[in-house]
Each structure stands twice: as C-alpha cells, then as structure tokens.
Length: 209
Image (tube, rainbow, N blue to C red; front, top):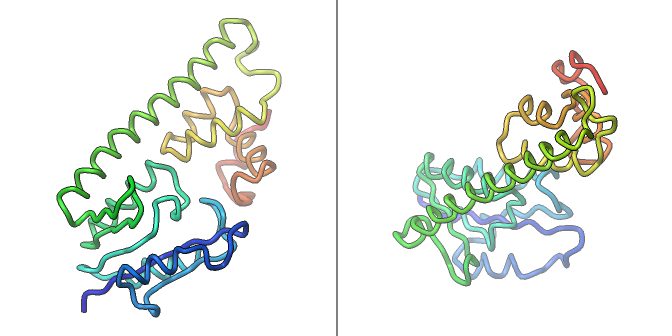
C-alpha cells in the first residue's frame, strides 16, 4: 500500500510543537507514519527517527518534510538525498520550498530540484575557489614557509571541514591546507565538528603537525 511518510526535526532551541507536525499531518500523513527527532540541531547529530523513516519507505511512497533545513544537511547532500530517494522509487515532498509546496513527482518540482542542483554546484565551486585563492595568497606572501604554515587556525579547520562535507576528497583538502589528516581529525574533533575517530587507521598512520 502506497503511503506518505513524514519526518520532522526539532532542535533543543525550539518548542516541542513548532508547527512542523501540524503541517505534515495536514498534508495527509497519518500520525503513525510521522517520525520526529527531538533535541537534534545539526547535520552530525544522531537522528534515529530519520533512519527509521527511511527504512519504512517503500517504492511508490512519498517522503514528506516541512522544509529542506529539517534534514540538517548542505545543499549538495540534500540533492544527493533526493536522488537516492528517486533511485528507490520514492518521491520527496517539501511543504515549504520557495514559498510553496514542492513535490518531485511533478514536472515543476523536478525542474526546481534541477535548478537547485545547478546552484548548489556553483556555490560549491565558488566556495572552493575562494578557499584555494586564500591559500595561494598566503603562500605568495611567504606565510607558508617550509611547505606548511606554522600554525593551522580554527578558521582553516572549519573551512577544510566545509569542503570535505561538500564532497571534496579529504586527502586533497588537507594537502591544500598544508596539514596532515591526523592534524585535521584531531583539531576538528576538538572543535566539535566530527565524532571521535580515534580508531581511524588512516589518521593513526599520518603524522601530526
């Protein structure tokens, strides 16, 4: 039987009833088919109810969310998420996107996601170009003596993390920033950007700066 499966994510800073549930139920989702993660505010936070919702989806079903930010992911990851659902024969319906209700099952909805993909890729390329231009300027100014900067700043760690989250290879990103993987993992964990990866064999094998 074809179903509507709903998902809501409520951060710890929001009221338990922030309107998402009401909107999703009003869209036709049965209360038993609505999955809600509470106290989850970031892309890296544990979202067990999202996992359950995705497991419940079957070909022909529609996955309903109030807005794309409820997935807590970057533009690129959201688009990949939509493509994955499409590959499973599942449609994605976003109740508040561009001021309206968008369903990938419709021609308009499919076209909007195509435009979003193009804009997301452009955003990704601009971000990467800015980061690499900044690195080149520092090198040309002699601020990167000996092939590595004397000190990797927290801002550089965050910039590297954004590139990696957007799909750039970790090895390439850390090389561009002049640091080892181990240094990146250690500093990123200290900033709360990723879970503990102390068992990562790659991180163990690399040197730290």
